Image (tube, one colour):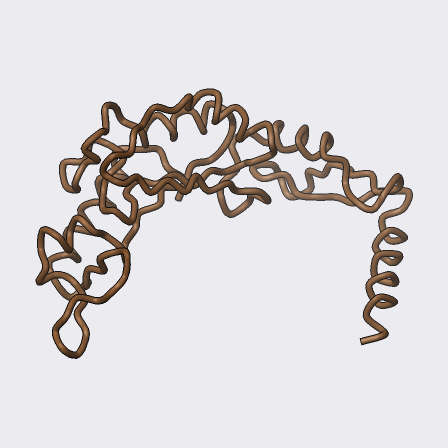
Amino acid sequence: MTDRPKSLSDRRKFLKAAVAGGGSWMLVPGEPHNAQFTIDYSEGDYPDLAQLRLAHEKAGVIPPDKTYRMMEWSLHFPPQGKFDFDLEGAMKLTREVGAESVLFYAQDHWGYAHYPSDVGVRHPNLTYDFLGKQVELARHNGMSAVAYYSLQANNQIVLKHPDWGWVDERGEPMPGRWGTPCLDTPYRQYALGIIEEICSRYKVDA
């Protein structure tokens, strides 16, 4: 255990020495593999954030698997939840703090769709295409969009179709806050329908 601080110190010294003078290079997504940009480590232990932001802005919308910073908008809306958000302001701030990709909820654990679904259960207070607006604004701000679908938890499905839910060895519903549907029931086709709907309607990257 006494060697750990020294090891970390030596590693940091090595990395600084390895990039001293010439800096380091990183591949820019969407550019030829010989395209490089320089990050100067000579003034400190960490890369310059302004340089990173500039390089990523030049690259345009970056696919989720090429990003270094993704933000999840974890929004599970109970029945009384409202969709009164300043989405434009929130999305602008999301980009300003360095996010390159955003994970949006298409359907949450409550089982409510955040868009005008023809397959799923729309949230009772949904007044506009919340998911669609989020995806549109993300791409407008240079971020890729990922759609989250709650597969394992869905209260609405289990309430409407108790025979689709997981049960214990006594045949009792599984305990917990969220209802858990079983894929060995018609829920499988329901889930596939939701996923097809999301992927065909929205320009999501994953």
